[in-house]
Image (cartoon, rainbow, N blue to C red):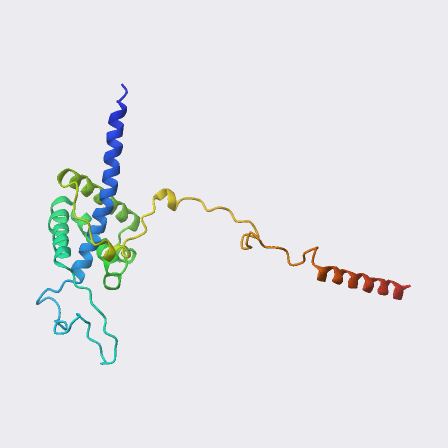
Length: 221
């Protein structure tokens, strides 16, 4: 029994929606990790300099350059709470997957603090590729759940996290074979040989060599 074409169109449309939404979900997790890293919670960390404007990091000398410190906005904090308190806690059932999602996100948001996800997997005895497959699967599952509950979730601050996101090239693009290079691929298209037959200097050099050969021939006789 053949299925109608409209059913396949509906399935492909939903798959495209889930794929697009999973990218947004992934970005929201990275933004939530970045927000929590830069969030000031009283009593958790040492107090920072709060009497100067703009917010700065303390420096050992007065002549040091003032560095502006990122402070999450109220909207960013609200989005982070939604990710951590609702998406992660309610919709990700597996505890291991929660750990992987949280660690992967903070490794992208703050690699200097958390290190790389590769090192985390190596230290804890996890297989990185397996962990990344589970993370991707959870992002797709979350996208499917959110598509039914809230088809239009809030978008992250792309200007803040765009540089943190990993390369999102498809598997086809990553496995695309490179074009074979010929032995002179480094030459420009309009390159000309150094010894051009029409070059007058080359013609003069040929005459000089010919005269020298004649002199050698006479000496041998």
